[in-house]
Image (tube, rainbow, N blue to C red; front, side):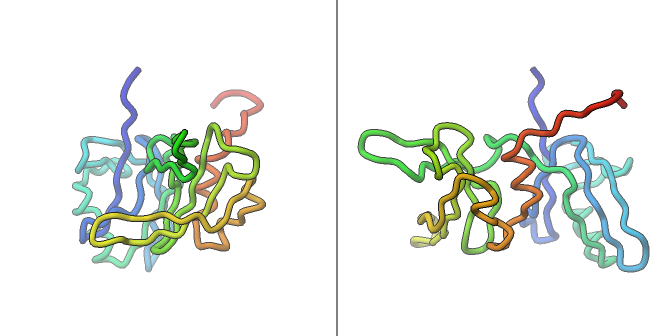
Length: 177
């Protein structure tokens, strides 16, 4: 089975903005013309093909900043295992289910347990706190059994990204393309 590849998008300061899967799409919004959707192909960790043009990831970020363009993902990494893993319900006897931080804001994270969570605790919003310079502590502030219970968009999270990771893709009906 081939290894899955992910494309990292950054700003010109090398801060990661988002990842998309190889073959995923982005939307570029230009200040002076219509938005454009571009298919992206993985070349290596620092290079990608965007709409048929090869870029170093920082070169692309710098070009977009120079012309005032913004870019956002249209496809998301769907595998929960790609995201950071935490054990929010650990006890002396068990580590509890693994929770994956699907989306983050400056102060909070949205966590999802794909397997093993008890009823009403499949989703969680945690408050992230820095302890010293390196270590983070995560304090659960809201639990829920469904996205409707949680309303992640009210916390500033990207609902499209969360749905892409936490819900099974809809089966297509009709002929294949």
